[in-house]
Length: 334
Image 1 (cartoon, rainbow, N blue to C red):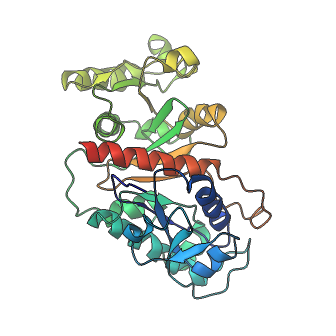
Image 2 (cartoon, rainbow, N blue to C red):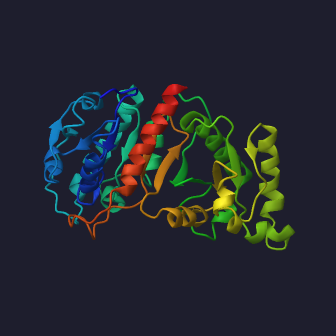
């Protein structure tokens, strides 16, 4: 198999969840495609998924082996895995796998990182101090060279929709206070640069979603559009970024509207996640923009309630792997 870029590296995530089975299913689905990846994890856990496994030392070793067996960078877990029941004893190994994967990407041995879901409670119990993957990876890459506006910015993709978040996991009553001109501008700059760098879009078109219904109705339904969103849109256009004034969110995501922009800047979590999950509930992808490394992940959790039953769908992970591969090719071409 000919590889124009380095293979990807996958992290296994929480081993008691659906991660191992969807990684195995993703390899089965993708092994004949012109790509390769290696997974960091316990080789015994992966062999238990019923796929052929080959142990490798680096992601680069995966290229010539990928079509025949799932390449695994073997990192044994300290405690046995009981499906559906996470053990905090394994949490540090989960974090170490993420750190090692990022190291491979920073060194160029991997072209990007794809992360299977983690369980935060056992991670926190082991002393993990980050809210999640994204913040941890941002910390791990903080000192790496990066030409552009730093993220991270969360982008969710589904079919032809790219929805990018100004605020993420905050209570709805807190979101208006956090929707500041500075946050909107940084988000838009990161998205604009990432669409050019990682998606090969020469002149990105951004649509800004309003915070309030009817885009504030001229101030009758809120002043944020007048006082914050419209001025920052003017500022961004003066910088050469093609972005709309705030548009009512209820008219921004139908088929015809999506054809007019390359990414939507959304003000709060559900404003982005509802259209993404409506368009493609099983195949959505979470992308971290504005980082020195490419990172994607499936848009779902560990699925402890269905782990080990053979019913977990790998659609989102497969989409995340394909997107990371496309982003790596676009970044390499630049």
